[in-house]
Length: 119
Image (spheres, rainbow, N blue to C red):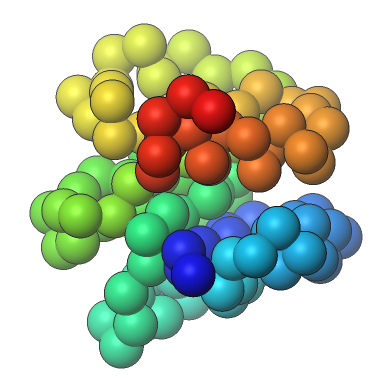
């Protein structure tokens, strides 16, 4: 069972995506921000981190950079309505952008493609 860590400062998004990915067969953990996610990653491993980009304290880009160093096997998906920095990301191929708003089924598809290639 693939393990996913969902990171967002909006409780409604965390709840929705947790339910969607649980139903899709993923082992799901949720973190309310990047620092909580980093703490979880210290004791657990994840196949994918699905994170919002715009959060207080540290943005999703910072979390992806940290994860690439600390957990190189972990893939990342960043969620944002508008982001100009993903095109410059050195982690392309290991990280994808999911544009908001999105259908939750699309989120599952994007994560699946990142883990297993196109379906």
